[in-house]
Image (cartoon, helix red, strand yellow):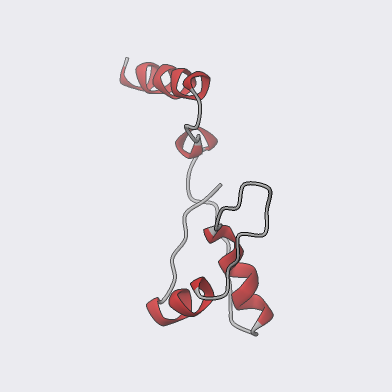
Length: 75
């Protein structure tokens, strides 16, 4: 999990090349760095936050987990 920063033209070019080749039929932004690297472009990764800040919410259980983290942080 992480954050991305792209220059606009490179991102648009990579977005044109991603395909929903997975069981969910979804397009993944995470495919863009690999596409850019395959074209010889520079891609840099840098950790910038704690794992708690990167928690995703896709289920009720995950929502409860994130709410608990926020409650602990605000206490």
